[in-house]
Image (cartoon, rainbow, N blue to C red; front, side, top):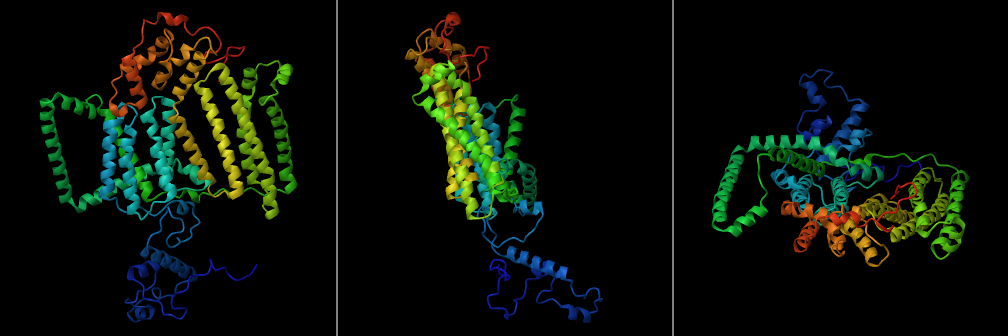
Length: 601
């Protein structure tokens, strides 16, 4: 290697060359750097003015270095600020080896009125709409919170990047799940995933630590966001008291006019009064503490989002040191043995699952469904452990050059492909079991999990070919897309549809009423096809929840509204006395317990 410094490490030359005189520095920058400005007296002039020798001593080398670094910082602040969403934009920041300096950005600018207005709108909408449940109200509250983050980022000089837009659009799309589905479990997954994607949109992370910690990074901005908001309000109020007074007066007059004329119009027309009552949330004294809490949570959440958008923590600054590289034989031999074991297992799976089951039945004595149930969980754990093995193998992989990279790809590539076949085998086993005994929430959940693990393996294979730069973000996108798809397909509706179809086709002599009656309103369209008394027995509990629920429109899902419409047209019949003998016979009723009476899924 050459001893000459690289081009990247050389200090930039001045436009006029080395001999060009340095332009005079601004007084503020000169004071920060510890050097005199052009119009201030130098050391010799200070001596003639009666300064002491200590005041006129020449700076030490360390002080000179500090002065150069401070001048560079002053020059950077004088230019255009770089965008944290555009890595590499703007002047490079001074190097600081401290963890806090690497992660913490400069303080955000003073909060703007547009940000304050969006934050207050978020808090008010949270107090008004979130007290009755979850539905389209989450999207209503998310819109002003997103605007607050956008205005704050714009004030800090940040520009929208493609990945930021991807996270933001994905988060808003996930919030559509509560508006469409009544089931609580896919709604919970969608809301948690939307929060994670929103946090990633604000922080712009791209590394593994950045994506993992950045998805929860919004919590770190709650307290700084509140402090930032209080300081901004004090500064704004102290500088423009007249404007604040005018704003309050205008708001009060508008509210008075709305109340007076709204009351008159509502008393004059019953249809208009009904429209107002359906659109506006009910205000009661008993709900005051709960609404106050929601107002505070909305305010704190919106301030945290705006603060993170203006000054995000750089979680990508967290680095994980690679492990000590191992020798080729020491590293590759265990993995080659594992590949051979996978290949032997998969050979048998191909024989069993694609035409050779009769021979296995003669040997094991197990039915098709029993054989499928026996190994699904083992294959799921095998998939998870394989991903862990791949991560550890990459940490300690040899890194000597092209030959080592070829070895890593030739060993881990076949392992990923073989694991994909294991994923397919596990999904085929679950398909056989569901076809025999019906679909349940746990069965569809673990099948979806296994399918996503297969997608992750495909992404790892693609990273081995095209590079791993986008792998952390691609895995996060696949997880969010999986949660969105899982919510949109309506798991409860799919469970009811599959079990009703088995009953209609004669594959099951009865339907498990004890299980399907606990499904959400999303299952009503499928259960409505059942004959009597199975239909009334399956829908009785759901009807009690749906028809006696006075939840307002903004907290009612489309699935619940559709179920209410069906049950109003065709309510359940009888008093439920026939339900004790319905769905009690046969084995195709949703579950099939094992010999100990325990159903593993």
